[in-house]
Image 1 (spheres, rainbow over the protein chains, first blue to last red):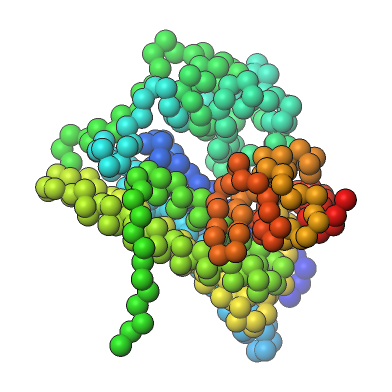
Image 2: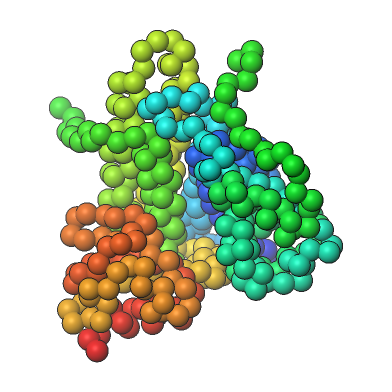
Length: 206
Length: 196
């Protein structure tokens, strides 16, 4: 196989794997935090990953290889399948979160303002975060919020401490509710007077 | 007659069970891919054992939910919990299937190895040997020791797994599953194997 095709498939596989794991993280978090936003993000990723997986399968099927390689190529197809299964299971979890779980003593899922919440903030061009790596900005230390995922121009990024934030990035973070205003301020968004409340009540008509 | 596995019921809140399922799912997927990268049957075997633990947890989740249901309204809202358990089971089965590719020993395609090599933060399995300077230290101290930030994802002591350990004190023979940059984990491996 030529080097270019090899690298293309590798890049594809990395994206497949990363996306499936991101979906898993977000899906469980959406459930534990009762977050509609995170759950919806997971479902958007589901469409995205279907496309990546399809591309991956076409690549594998289209490159000619020796018959003795068939066994390991099968392993390759299986690895792609595994990412798809993880993605599907994550989508199932997100759908349960979206349906809404009734607060029930056995669930202990009632979330108050003192507890964990999810916040989405767009980074303005004046924000101190712009052009800096996350470890430099010390977001978690300053606000108590942990950035789960960064949306940048239609792509999802799993941030590391080295990730450099850009103006226009949409940050989805989780942490204690009291950190929300600080987080929005640091991102450059004006903090609203009313704190967002996450409700676990069932939607009417369901 | 089919050999059926005995599950053990333990009182646990649904939230606790869900948190553990989340941690286990993530750990198993990481371990499974690491077993592929390192072509390690040992790591793959850990994954298969964790799969059994997930099965038990889902069993506990299902029993707790059934016990708590008294009428149709509760059944409707708690049915979601059963679905989550089923999804967690799917994830752990997927991870176990990856591990089985390694155990099968039919060889890993170079594409997969290359893809996994590109991941910056790797998982490592570190066994604490006799005389190691790590013995007696708490898990939370490991981060400072390794200097480049290492996250201990799980600790195995004989047959018992502790996922996301914090206050545990390290004993000889413990197996640590850690994640971090290569320098940090390599340093930790050296500390685990040598006495000071």
